[in-house]
Each structure stands twice: as structure tokens, then as C-alpha cells.
Length: 508
Figure: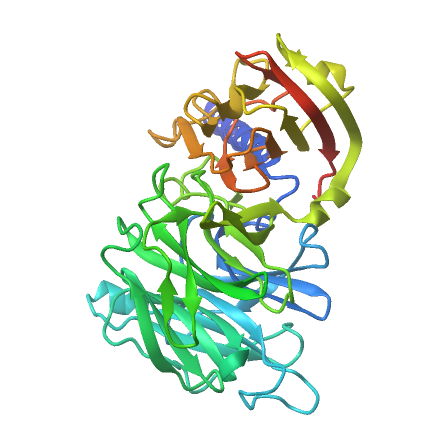
């Protein structure tokens, strides 16, 4: 008996040791890859940001969430709030699945005039509008499993009650009928909904958020990219010297310029009934592979603030994190810019990000006739950080992040190709997906001689905003050791007119 007991004890000790080692590795990955300046779920799965609304000084973020596992599963609306779009407070789940289905993507609005009739006393209704997806119906091969429902909050988004009359829009027997984004159209005194329907977008109107009428549709063959379904639309307006110009954001998966998921947009007119694009050609909001399902916060006044899901459906379920998966991009201020005779949407990191900056260093007229290792020049330069570069001429430039294991991430501009790039070929772990490692590019749209780049770097992501946000790239990466060396280099005799570095305080 004693030898057997010893074997059992030894085996148990080995299992405990393996368990502890596994836990340590998991904990190490948790620390190595958990973003320091981006929103992530406290645990388990996250994808599309949903229901983003600003109310009484708080930015509300709801998001697609599987509370039971770090992979896609039964969708709930997770919930977090922030006063500055940077520091987030995790709250309990806002909206749960019910008999009509799980809770897919959607939006939320402040019904200030009580058009819905849901107000009680002085409480202003907040209305969430979302798709309900019936998993059993999908498995049974039916075509009516996606419908639009609403929930109501009368206590400033603390709790939500589903509407007994759900769904408010029933599917006309279409399998892909989802992602309602709603706003108030003042000219017609009505609510307008953009809805993704297969390969096009449908527009609905409602006087009260409960009864909806189809107005029109736009898209289909010949407009934009259709390699996959259209998803998560958002219809926005911008002022161009007194003229209102509209932008329709449409996410598509797959079909993005660097494979997988991406966000296209179209500029045009909207009269409350029809959206008429100026051009049916595609434009991309972000050329990196890791910004998808981005939509804007409602009720933000003159600001147009967008955030996206910082991943890609090609590999989102299998990236090397275990306790949590996926993050939100840095929120971005959007603007409409005229480039020649064309309109383009520019994206810049929100100004609130500057509140995280410390250990700031500003240098001028750096001649790159050789590599400039600024992590040596700047004492204790480290990630997360923000780096701004201004070049006298649009010449070749590379920012290289590397570690002692020979892993590196390269961000830069190729003057011959006239394009920006992010090279994560040797950035670290890529074994989880065949095409994860690679060189990704974005065209340059500005025709100015000078070039500027603002680069926001976290422990496992980089966001490039070039030419004041006309060219944007978002990429995630997974080094096996934190990058500790940062250098600038150029094959040209490039002069950096202005170099700015700032460390960023962790929000964890």
C-alpha cells in the first residue's frame, strides 16, 4: 500500500505542479498582453462595441459579451462607463438573452422628448435598440431568426427592462437582418435607423422607436466591397462650411484591404428618406487588419467619436490570451476633410488621451543618416507610449520596436510606393493563425510635401494616424517578451523636423 500511496502522492504533486505552471503561464500572458491603455473585458469574450451613448457626464459602452468563456458564444450586452473615454468602470451585464434570442449588436439613444411614451415622472428614457438572434432557429435552418428589439432604462442606464411588444421590427424572412443604429433626424422630427441586410443597408423611420416604417435601401452589387455580409452601419453628418454632408459607415467581413474584417464608408446626401452616395467606390476608415464594427457614441453634440473592436474575425477566437479576449481601439474623433475635390473621413485619437501622458520629450531637427535609438536617448522610454513625428519631406522612415529575442514590429512610410506600412512579420507569436504574420499597407492620400505620423503604442497593439488622420492603421501583435528597444531609421537622409515622445500611464 505504501508504494501505491507514494505513487499517488507523487502523481498528485506532478498534477499540482503542472496546474501551477499552467496558471503561471496564463498569468504571464495575462500581464504580457493585457492592454494598459485600451478597454478590455474583465474576463472572457468581447467583440462589437454596442449601444454607445453619452448621458449626464458618462460615456456608456455596451459590448458583445460571452460571460461564460473567452470565445464567441451566447451574446449578452456587457456594460462599462467612463467620464473621459479612457478610464473605464466595469458594471454588471446590462441585457441578457431571453425567449426571442441572444443579444446581438445595436445602439442606444436618449429619448429626451419622450417620443416613446416610456417616461415616468421626470425620468428620461434611454432606449437600447438591438438585434435578437434565435440560435435554435438558425440551427433549424429557418430564415426568421434575426429581429429587432428594444429595452428601456428609466434610471440612467443602471438597469434595463425589455419591451413587452418585442420585436419592434420582424425580419421579412431574411437570414442577415441586423445591427440597428438609430439617431434623431431633426428636419423630419423622426428617428432614423440604419440596418444591415445581407449585402445592403436599409433605412427605417419611426416617430416613437416602437413603430417602424421602411424608407429605402442602398448598396448591393456595384457599390463598395461585397466579399462578405455588410454589418454594423452608422449614418453620420458633418458640416462643410454650412453644407451638411453625410457619411455612411459600413463594416464588411471578409473583404478588407489587408484581409478579413474591415470598415468601409461612403460620402453622400441624406434627405430623411434616401441616402445618395457621391461615389459608389469604396473608401476605408482604417487600413490595418484590427479595427472592425466601429460605430459612434450618440448624444455627444458636435463631437463625432468612434471606437471599434480591435481584432479580426480571421483569428479573434484563437489569439494567445486565455482569461479574456479582445479589446476596444482608442476612441477617435472623426472629421470630414476635403482632399482635392474628394471628401475623406479623418480619424484622430481623442484629446483625452493626452491626460495619460508623462515623461514628455520634444526634440527638433534630427538627421537620420544613421539609426537613432531614442530608447537610449530618452531615459526609461517604455511602452505604452505615444510618438509623434513630423518630417520636412515625405521620405522613407521606419520606427522599429524590438526585444532581446530578436522580435520586432516596424511602422513606417515607403516613399517609392507612397504608402504607410506596419510589418508584424517578426513581431512575436503568430503560430495560432497562418497569415497573422505579414506586412500590411495603407495608401497616402495627402499631397503635401511634409508628412506627419502619430503612433499610439500599447503592449500588444499599435495605432498609426498619418497626415492628421487621413491614413490610419490598427494592428495587434503578441511578442514573447516586452519590446524594450525603440529606434528610428531611414534609407534616405531624412530630417525629422519634430520628434515627440510621451509615456502613457496605465489605466489598469
